[in-house]
Image (tube, rainbow, N blue to C red):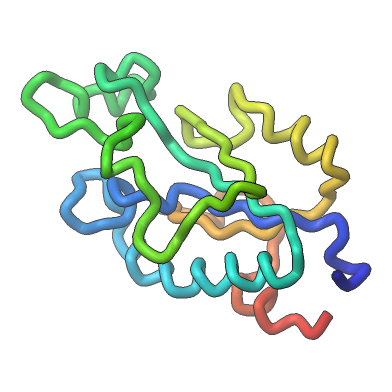
Length: 156
């Protein structure tokens, strides 16, 4: 692996069926369109032997661990979203968590809130992250990042 990538990890966030596929009330508009590029980014990270961290939502079937404003999705008459073990909590087709990857389960918007992501990154010596995420508004996360296209075309 090139020296420049030794402290880099790929974070793949919220690429689950209930958050991507248009049948879901929680699907992010345009989410399906990014899947092919996320697949390419994962392949590139694997080719560079970068750690891949899959950040996924997995909720209790009763919604007890969901943000208050989402609890209505877990009412008795509703289809539950990203419930642990459900097909909706699975990654979309073409994406797969391999045995040497790291799966991080979150129950809030942030992958850092009440998770061990920070300590994992520190322990692995990771100081740079590349983010592939299915999010509504990436420009408001307050982090300057290269675009996925720039990263995929980097020569080193």
